[in-house]
Length: 326
Image (tube, rainbow, N blue to C red; front, side, top):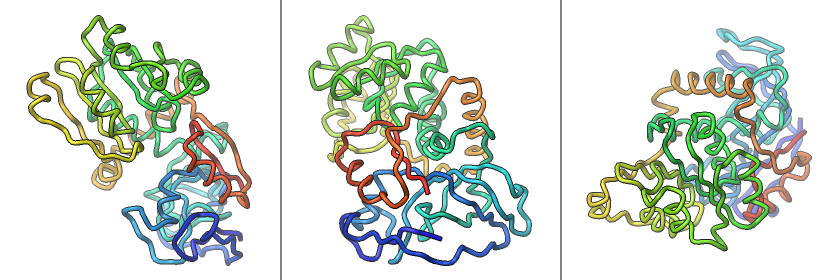
């Protein structure tokens, strides 16, 4: 089988090598999966560079989420051969490969009709958004949700989940094309943050009250500005720092305006509460079958073209998810 290997640390195009190796053997409690599609994430680039918090031994295969079909089940597994699934292979044996062997605890059944490209790009982004909005922020119907980077993978998921909950969604994005994508996803109000002061616009749209929940995967200046348009008793969700700068949170301001700064660490939540992650997955599958949510796919690439795809992802000019297909 073909599998991408990081042979040294550096830029993906310099350190990734597509190698032939034996198909992995099936082990007790694991499932052998033929990969149909693999999602590319920004942290795959950081892994290649050695800048991610997790530093697997070299050589390793990146790729955190895949869609595929079970071809063989190890002893003790409940899932069976022939089932289509999404899975999160563990490093150093990631999903940028034609076959993976994954612990059953990291495998989730999907509807037969679900396209592989959508399934592969769904797990991390929609799980993160669902956990953020409904577990951490306790988002309620009738509230106002402000989603930053609405055309991104996790932002696009938050827009759709917010609309499914019955809230008013305001989305920010950079440039007319990404703003239009947010509209197509269902956002009630869209703001091009490059051309418009989103703080002023949010206040206008909420009669000066501000947003009840702010979904922020950007950090930096976006977080600093968001504090100016958070409602009384509001919740700012700290999802990540795509903007590059980690903001300081002045707690006196949180006290005076009576809002909460809520951290979101879905990865740790998953380790501590695997049964709840399965519950979220089942809820997401119901929403998908109801056509309330649909993963946003930017482009598909051949497995052999992964280094070029990661370069495109690194430019941060994409939207939704980039998918590699064997």
